[in-house]
Length: 158
Image (cartoon, rainbow, N blue to C red; front, side, top):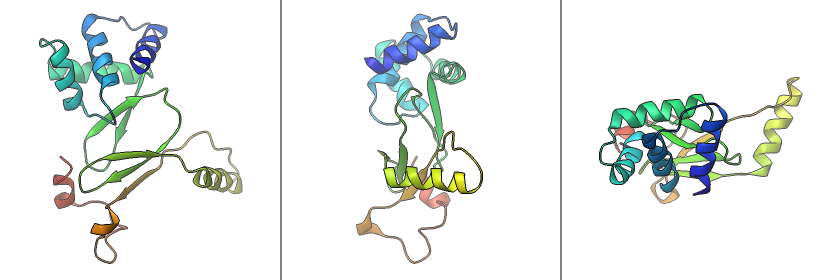
């Protein structure tokens, strides 16, 4: 429940009133593995408190985002997903077949990004890297790997 405590602590630090329903949404978010969307969080939260509506979950997630307790991730599949904003830096690989989000950290990529920023006259403050792919055994036809997912590909992610 470290993630739940971190979300609630950040909300309290920012002066956000911690209602019972907000606590339930924080618990639901913390209990779900991976990068849940609002529907996933609502499904879990409604098992904890059947009175919680999807609209309440959306409003609460927006409040959590506004105070910096959660980060909203908008991948190309069109679904907003959420994670604890205080987690250590990492990048994402999104499987276009099943929508799975794989976290990774590659020191070589981190060094390259910092080097590029310096070369352009900047000090890198942060970044977000999202890679989109399919398993090697299901490689797309030539040229498809560099294109963003089309509507047909996205429907498999919903």
